[in-house]
Image (cartoon, rainbow, N blue to C red):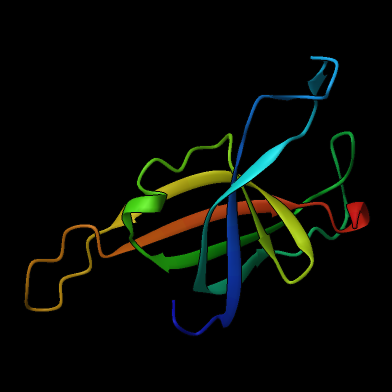
Length: 116
């Protein structure tokens, strides 16, 4: 996948937070990792889909690290000014002649380009 573009990624996890009056604050996010990775576009979002424009789909590849071990579909990722909803996470065991467990993560994510 190293044919994609290198970019800086910020992974975030939703958190429950409240304002000064104890009212829940929607859409609160806490950064869990800021890493370099590769971005490859796998869907351009062209053409209408069910319910409106289709989302732009990308795949990010990052080195596995403990801070990303619990990455879920509830998390999100920022890259180059767009926020992407994570739609898939896969650990890759690419053999390179030594213990290859947990070397890489492939993260598939979708962003609606009109939501910027």
